[in-house]
Amino acid sequence: MPNFTLADSVFEAAASRFPTPFHLYDEASIRQRARALNQAFSWCSDFREYFAVKALPNPAILRIMGEEGCGLDCSSSTELTLAEICGFSGERIMFSANAMPPEEYDQASALGAIINLDDASDVDLLASHGGVPECVCLRYNPGGDFSIGNTIMGNPGEAKYGMPADQLEAALGRLQGLGAKRFGLHAFLSSNTMAETYYPQLAGILLRLGKDLAEKTGLGFAFINLSGGVGIPYRPEEAPIDISRVGEGVRKVYQEICPEGGVAIKSELGRWMTGPCGWLVTRVVHEKKTHRDYIGVDACAVHLMRPAMYGAYHHITVCDKGDLPGDHVYDVTGCLCENNDKFAIQRPLPEIEIGDLLVIHDTGAHGFAMGYNYNGRLRSAEVLRREDGDFQLIRRAETPKDYFATLDIDPGMKI
Ligand SMILES: *Cc1c(COP(=O)(O)O)cnc(C)c1O
Image (cartoon, rainbow, N blue to C red; front, side, top):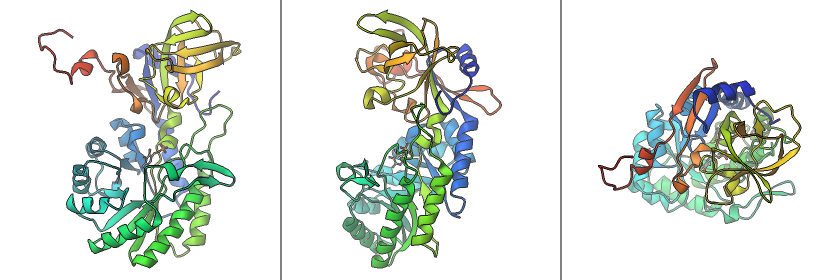
């Protein structure tokens, strides 16, 4: 069994109301995670999570985040518009930019967002597009490998994001000349990490660097932004991160480096916030026995790209067959003309029949959001299970009309 799931009867009830495939999200568990995170950092008076919109960009979800006291981390004009539609403005929005069209700074500035600059050259871009605000965030890239203990957890030296310390200093000097008074520091050094020491270690790096830069420039050091990267257990044998221990670890580092306080902490978690609270619900439509046994389902990689793109593991259960032994080995596939369109490869599962309902777990972050239209396949619906157990359609499935909407075709043609 995966670490967190709902009863099979819930998936069956949803599938009796909405045609498969669809992503189902659970409101109660999303709120619970937001509260656990806020509780873990409650020792820090000015902590705020800025939910990474790209992980699950649906207004119903973003409004829940707002109600739980979170801000939003946006990285495009469309995401800024989404944030605005959902009632976010001012410093409840973080705008993390890299190589973006300059007009997007104008939009972020007009909303009063905190702007996170990716490169020293962006200072002048910001100055001419919306102006330099009093408080600006800068993204740090230490280069080389990033290790926790003896384990390499990331390769900042190969990452396109952020700037080295000397460039940070130059950028801050330039920002100061343009009227900035305070600054924040951001870094994202490891993705989907299951190490509870990741945030504490990153906090140490940013707090030390920030104090050093504040001394050199005379600018006020306002906050560190620990960004995203805290992982979730995709495999049933993995243990979940204890977020209260993460918060406690950061507190210890903070008290050591910054006993006088005054520096706020921000996060931009995506995966950790919603990943375990989403499922792709799909029905078996085909079975084929050739060199392997293939189970064909009505979802495909356009609905969940992670297995095809990263070889990522997503746990799969078969509704009503949870008690049966996994004594059959299957490749579970979609219908794309693309051999990596497989949700599972050589996976032991109970014996599956056409018509069975399959649940693909942990799709609540970077799932629907990475969807595309390859092979003319259409994006699925998204359904929210409200706290009272009722289902709400929070995004309808695409129809062919949506696919053809951007094409110049004969208006008289019937679609
Ligand atoms: C993707 C991203 C996040 C969220 O990452 P998760 O791995 O989902 O936690 C946060 N901040 C920035 C700048 C990102 O690009």
